[in-house]
Amino acid sequence: MNPADELRILIGDGGITEDAVRSITGITTEKLRSFLNQAQSGMVVADPEKMEVLSTDESMRLSILVAQLTAGFQIDDDERLTAILESLTLECGLTVPNIARLTGLEIEDLESGLHDPASVPIEKKYALALRSSYVINAVGLARTR
Image 1 (tube, rainbow, N blue to C red):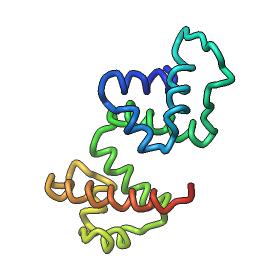
Image 2 (image 1 turned 135 degrees about the vertical axis):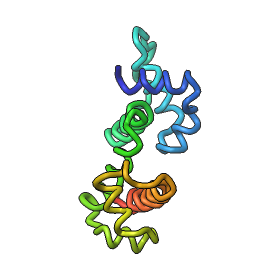
Image 3 (image 1 turned 180 degrees about the vertical axis):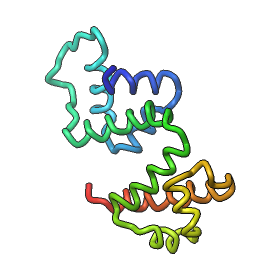
Image 4 (image 1 turned 90 degrees about the horizontal axis):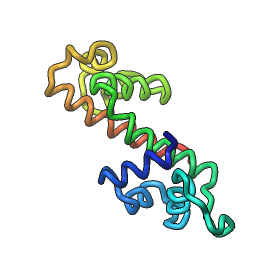
């Protein structure tokens, strides 16, 4: 299934609205509607010249959003926590002590979250998840676009 079909399903099922997609991506109403309509199975476009086309960047961002909102929630929460912490250490270059200092979490809890999240008590896992998600969001906002 292509991203347009998946996005139509998400919108149709009430998982997200067109307004939310526009707010999240910054893609104009016209481009978003053209994307949703032109890719619809079997649709004949009366005047393809009037259709707004997504840029490569917009198409990529929209595809990533759709993938995250559809397939992303099938990932186990412990795996997701480990992936967030691995992203902070491997991709962003933060050390576990850096993350501990930034988040106020214990180094031992962060190490457990990286290597054996099932062993972390739920209260600590909650703090690990929230605070590491906050840091990963801050990193994402700081990256070049």
